[in-house]
Amino acid sequence: MRLFTPTPLSREQFDRIHLEKDMESLVKFGPSGVSDEAVYINSYFRDRKYYIPFSAVSRIYKRVAMSKGGFTGKGVFASQAYIVVEYDDGEERKALFKREEDVDRMLLHISKKHPEIRTLSLNGERRLEKRRKEEEKRYLKTLSLEAENSIKEIDNEISYLQKREELSIALSAAAKRLRAARLSKKSLKFVATVIVVLGLVSLLYGISSLLENGFSDAIYFTLFGLAAVFLFSGLSVIPTGRNNTRVLEKSLSEAEKALEEYTKAFPSFSVPYYYAHPAVLERIKRVIREGKAEDIDTAFSIMKDELKKIDSSVTVSEEEYEEIVAIKPMFLLRDYN
Image (cartoon, rainbow, N blue to C red; front, side, top):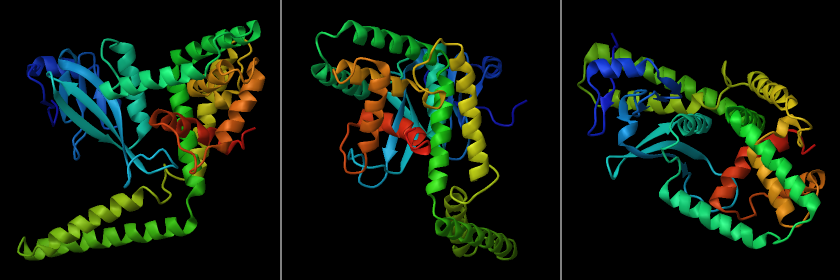
């Protein structure tokens, strides 16, 4: 017997027995999840609070909300990742995730188990098509035989990586977390620690006052609110059992080891295992199609040089921005070697 039963959002619903049976196949991704017949999404306060049967779903996709100022195409901004579900011919529900890679893993799982569900928004599909056409204008109409063979080899490698794309997602996520941890200033972590301590003190004082005086004074609600803000803002910064450099280095090492083992089975994989990500190979392929190189090694070197030059002063499209933030930390941690 479950303590909490998920609430249906769509017109189509499961009866209690059907719902219990469906949840036996539930695979969790952060605060949400995917079963054989439905997607389960969270509220702000409870994981997997709602469900929507796939038969009612038209699209499920990622939405990234940028910090103040929004997406400008320049630099790296703080962001929050959401899963968005479109259902019942126009209804929409979004759910916030703490880790963007959980959204990516969830969408990958859905695309494999339910290929009929679209995993891009309508605007995303339009932007992707526009970008494809713009890129094709830069491509050579005729390539040399060596360039054609290089592209075929890269396409085979991309297809091979996509069979276990969760490995590349894990590599990208581990590199981003470690890079962020190494950039975090010690003074910032000290301030965050102080904030958490203040939050705990506020929380304990609020509970004590509430037990003694009841709900007679709104200051106690303020204390609870401040405690929540302090705790949740501080705990995301200070080193913890899961958020310290040693643990993050181990996580990256494990992700790299998994890809090292996986790429060994592919004859002469063209990039080092610690850069084995479909987006890296796609960028190499674009270099060749633009006529800047014919062989993969030269194209890889050019791609690295171009990636290195992209900083906060360079304007890129939203799609390329997502591609860059997925792979650049891997290169920064290795100093592009």
